[in-house]
Amino acid sequence: MTKKILKALAGEKQEVPPIWMMRQAGRYLPEYRETRAQAGDFLSLCYNSELAAEVTLQPIRRYGFDASILFADILLLPQALGADLWFVTGEGPRLSTLQTQLDFENLRTPSEINETLAPVYETVKILSQELPKETTLIGFAGAPWTVATYMVAGRGTPDQAPAHLLKDENPELFDNLINLLVEGTIEYLSHQINAGAEVIKIFDSWAGSLKGHDFDKYALEPCKKIIAALKTKYPETPIIAFPRQAGDRYIGFAKKAGADCLAIDDSVSAEWIAQNVQDDGCVQGNLASSHMVSGGTELIKETKKIVKALSNGPHIFNLGHGITPDADPDNVQIMIDTIRNVN
Ligand code: 1CP
Image 1 (tube, rainbow, N blue to C red):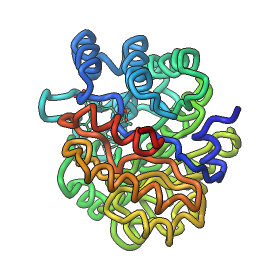
Image 2: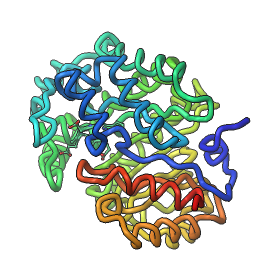
Image 3: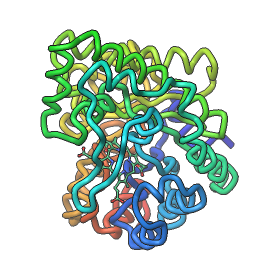
Image 4: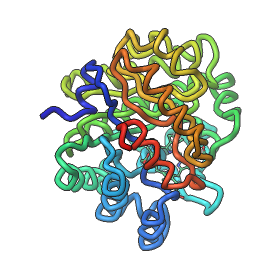
């Protein structure tokens, strides 16, 4: 039996698309909040392999999603490269800032990341043994541009202005950082695949802030290099690219980057995706995560609309971005029942 997610990634269209959700292990679930409290804080949870595997499994037990995504964070890689990382409760991640050549030189090399990241690989190993046999295990990393924006600014900023400034003022330093992140990401993802990840997803959450030539240089090219390196070593491992908010530049992205699937946010309609992107292969998306909060008939209507619009080609159902802490867990079940046509 081939798993539903792997069928979609191989280009097969299915009457009922496979389903998973970004941030499916998260604060909207009471069992997640309980395990996180047990771990102490978010980072301790990421580095505690048993508990990280436990929170990864929770949404699978509750909902029976077709895929499970490793519980970790895109900011663990910069931490393994030597940046300081901490989380401020109620606010989010904070990192030491990278502004100068000296800051860059103080970072470690890609081959030195594995000691810090060993517990993440152990989580993958546990999951590959404990997941139900029909569930696909997805490993992931942030794309170099998105990770660099956090490393430069030290935090998430609305327009990622500090990273744009550094790339324009000191392109040599910025390019060195991007290249280091390309190599570090290849190393990190290779270890996840060796540990048992069956699919890889690359999150470029801030790709949409790159304009013109910068989009090709900092979103497309690094992603293409990572995929090419992984495909050489692991030709059988499908890769999902997510250049969030790429708009028109979603068109042709998967082909150019060498990805097997393009994940798409909810700033474009499912009809637009069907017309412009799905010819290239599998697409993943794209219900607005706000429906997980508001629920009701709109949730059912929008879910059906997306399934129908993307039913003529390979499709993995997902949200346009991560589920938020204020979501109602019952709405997730309603979404799943609507897709699987229960009731
Ligand atoms: O428990 C908590 O309070 C922490 C909330 C949380 C969670 C559940 C963070 C902090 N990270 C995560 C896990 C996480 N992060 C996963 C695990 C698997 C899953 O999806 O269930 C993944 C894939 C990520 C990826 C991630 N982290 C991204 C890319 C995707 C996206 O959401 O755009 C980004 C940008 C981050 C950074 C980050 N980590 C956490 C927060 C709140 C943020 C965003 C901060 C900001 O932009 O200000």
